[in-house]
Image (cartoon, rainbow, N blue to C red; front, side, top):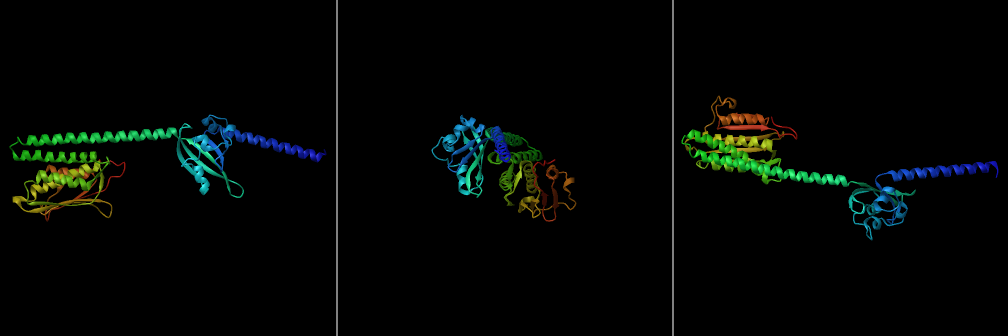
Length: 355
């Protein structure tokens, strides 16, 4: 052997050692990965698995080679319906799937990527299965906690509604023993306010949404209740509603409901003296600029020319002014042709609280 042949032999041996070392390093890296990794051919046969995958199946990596994946992992005679490898062989794209596999010990997020030869032909795929059993358990625990919370919230709304209904009944019962008409009217107004709040909790309890209230349905029912309380002896007054389907959160719906209660009560009491015929309108809609507009107006005797709601001696009107501030609204009053109250406000943003 001449010197040149000897050098070529040494170089060849060096290359073999380098490749062997690289292969060992790749194997060590491959087997060190905690995810379950399987390399498969186009016939669903295992070409190679890492140690984590072999351990999950209770075999050595060598014994897994050549077996069909569906037999080894799923215990079936053919690929399962949700097999991402089958989908990959059809369209050549990467696929992901969450799979419950008790044979491997739980839930896994499986990512399947294609292996292609020099000509771009698919010759197999790489399966990476990440154990997401704990994540699924946490998600299920959170879902259960949310369900329990919603049940608790429904029960709270139900109990609050019941307590408010009892208060309303007690006020109604007590008012029967009051001979003074002005004192009896105070009890009647208080009963109306309590029923206004009770109705919100009742509708939330019966709704699938414990945070938002359909104001069209609420105002319609509230108006019926107020009519039964205040308009039963006022056949001369018509109540006309023009309402859009608007959802409000409970913290806004309660003050808006109380505002409507006070305005309707005020119109019934003062707008139509001596059985004068008239109409009360309640309008609620969203304006083009996104603001919400609540209008309560009547065609009764109107308001004094110097009327200012913030200076009123009426508890109900002062309450309206305070509640409008609470929802960050602006109120306009026109008393020239009956009483016309317009309140504009914006929907409360997520996380924002009324002061």
